[in-house]
Image (cartoon, rainbow, N blue to C red; front, side, top):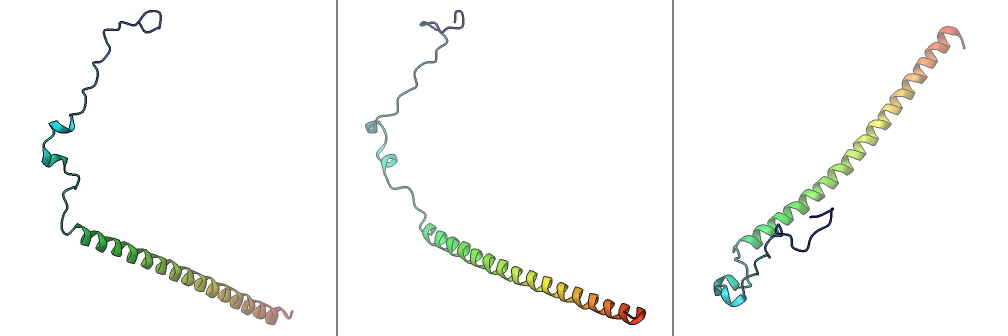
Length: 98
């Protein structure tokens, strides 16, 4: 490097990458296009996908029920607040003659 520029004859340049092995140099059993297959892999994969789908449906159901429980609780709290407010108002009215 001279003055921040690359020189054409840089001895620090890496050697060219080795070429891939030619197809004829690789043993025939390595060249097979079919990957080794576990005979039970498809069944396990289907079972896993079925379990994931079941878990997703179960999660959606639980969320829906949680929303219903939340709304029921809010409704109960509003009812309780109104009941107490009206009871207190009635008691105050009776005591002070409003």
